[in-house]
Length: 197
Figure 1: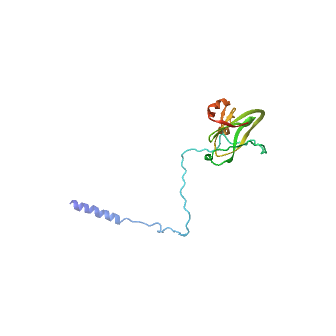
Figure 2: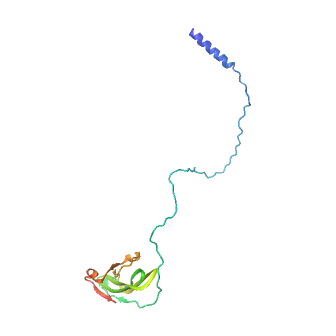
Figure 3: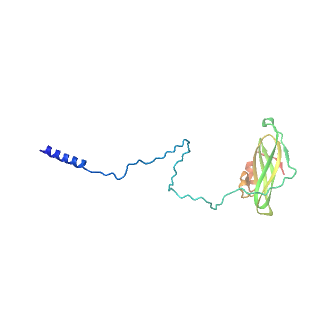
């Protein structure tokens, strides 16, 4: 009996489905597609994204830094330069002319620098110079001063010591400064003077 009832329901459902009327309101039409094929290859482009990460500001700020500045340069003039000729045993090598120069960069007032003495021991030289402050103002300028001696000798190790107040300029770090020659006494042991101004 159950089978007949299920069959009857299925038959009536089929009747209702087949007896449904469908009216077409518009004609079926496929969309128009225009194809334009270009065989040339164009460069691609990666996508760009606007990512909210951090604010970056580029600008300038006032800071105090050390920068090179123009210095007063002295004119070249012909002068008598001390010349030292040293004969040493052949084991030290052949003689060549060398220029021994001491320099300082000063500001505030004019200064003078002079090579006062040269001490020697074996193949070592110690050059002692003196820096003296003058009375003429340089204003806001700075000035490089120098003294030199020509030496005809084999290659020698040279150390410089300057007697005087070290000017507050970065350039002057190349030499060691001492208040007076007595402070050098221990460094001059076993050396003898070969030049004195």
